[in-house]
Amino acid sequence: MRVLVVEDDARIAQDTARALESAGYRVETCGDGEEAWFLGDTEDYDLIVLDLGLPGMDGLSVLKRWRTGGRETPVLVLTARGNWTERVEGIDAGADDYLPKPFQMEELLARARALIRRASGHGSTVLRAGRLSVDTRTLSVAVDGAPVSVSPLEYRLLAYLVHQRARVVPPPELLDHLYGDDDSREINALEAVVARLRRKLGPGIIETRRGFGYTLAGGDDPS
Image (cartoon, rainbow, N blue to C red; front, side, top):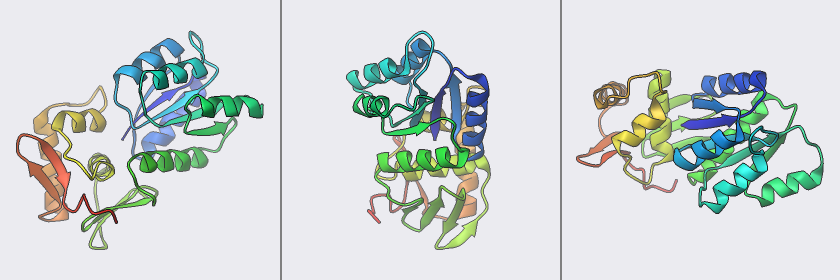
């Protein structure tokens, strides 16, 4: 899952990014409103963590421009401002949730999980597709209830597929959400990760739709 953290305080940005990365997310950061608007308008994120007090363009204006332009990415607003009217203004502008500073990272992670799973139609922290279950709180994977040991990269791939369980995910999209800018983005690398997961999970879990991409067996099951 791919997250953009927009925060001009370098320490808060670094701490937030580190916590999200430890929770299995691929994280990018920026500290300027204009850059944030451009990234959110042109890139595909699963969540944006947005500070309101930004240089260049304030966070509220950034958010309004995203929503006016039709961008529906879930947005968690961070701010040191305590005035309840500003919270209302942020939510009315299109924020999906609001977290005042200072905050506990555990709460931010819980809110992030909730926003991402709601956006993909899930109600629980344990996401299921057929025989597969992915626990987004403990970062664990199971097949038919039996735990399966996976690497952080393998977990990210499964987490993205299970969040997108109702559709086939094209390889370029998976690469975009799986790898950072410094990592390999070759299709062969993705195929290698899928092959390893198939050996661990067993047959019939990850399906390939030739010419289209990957999906999970039982992904259209609403359970």
